[in-house]
Length: 143
Image 1 (cartoon, helix red, strand yellow):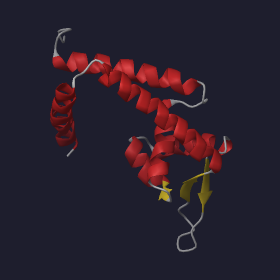
Image 2: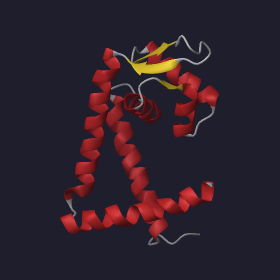
Image 3: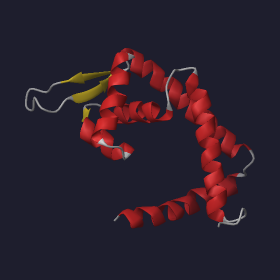
Image 4: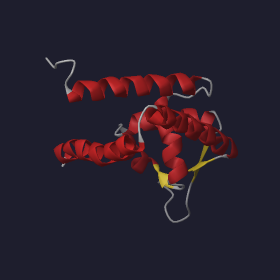
């Protein structure tokens, strides 16, 4: 059992608090966090395919299909069939998707502002140096 003062327990608690903040903030947009992450990925990678999105989300293809169907039904994304490969549909944001991703970005900006509110510039710099080292432990595990 982990002690409540262990670093990994503190990271876990912060992660839960952040996830709750994001989930509550996304409710008024009628999005869940996985849909928001999907929209964000598509915004950053216009024309991406479902396989790439599934890899990013670390979700099975069937799950991603359901996510995309819900986003398409809400008119946030559109799928286009490229001439050179009719089997793989490319994903793009619609005008409504562009608007909602702007609001999603604001939510994450608010989250970042909250995180940094009580920190000094030096503490922020230190975290920016240390957190990637912590994350790399998990990247090595996947390899």
